[in-house]
Amino acid sequence: MTLRIAPSILSADFAHLGDAIASLERGGADLIHVDVMDGQFVPNLTIGTPVVRALNQITRVALDVHLMIVEPERHIAAFAEAGAAMISVHVEVSPHLHRTLSKIQELGVQAGAVLNPSTPARVLQPVASLLDYALVMSVNPGFAGQAFIPKSVSKVREVRAILDAAGNPAPIEIDGGIRPDNAAEVVRAGAEILVAASAIFGSADPVAAIQNLREAATKGTQVSLPEHG
Image (cartoon, rainbow, N blue to C red; front, side, top):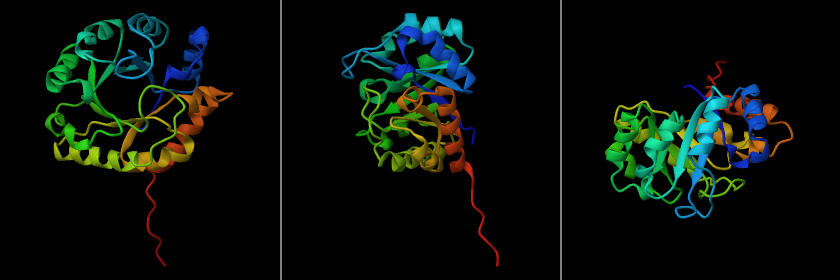
């Protein structure tokens, strides 16, 4: 298992975004998670390709772009050109999911499918062999700072089983309410990429917050051996 921490800039101070990115780099962030919202699929409006392009110019950390938008297939090429290394789309708004994922990959970008909390894991079965990663939402998307939905842990296990059945070792990403107190649990369930927004930027020290989250999550990768008397 390759554990990765992906801080989300959703909770960052956009007036000082360059400073925020620098702090993520100092903290050892593996990815920078970029939440793109259109005010239609989710009740919030955030950023677009100009910000992704600007981020790509100031960081060497890979940009993980999460499209929470309707008709994502219309914008994939623009986000790829802006510098996205990963692009995920929601199954709820992607009626031609196989085609959309294939298009992302044709652009040289890793393709992921996202499940809302109320969407069953089984909908990934038809595309399980195609995915570069799967993203499980552990809150209802749209806002940072929401409480983790406990049933997300069992969904991560279900998604892992579906990917394994397809012979696909693609990692599972989890997003929403991820904190040091639940990080080990989701990692034990099969999550390898942990997205965190308020847990990092809500801290007085984002650098330490990243390191604390990684330390807590790493405990989920440790297997306890039975004691021998």
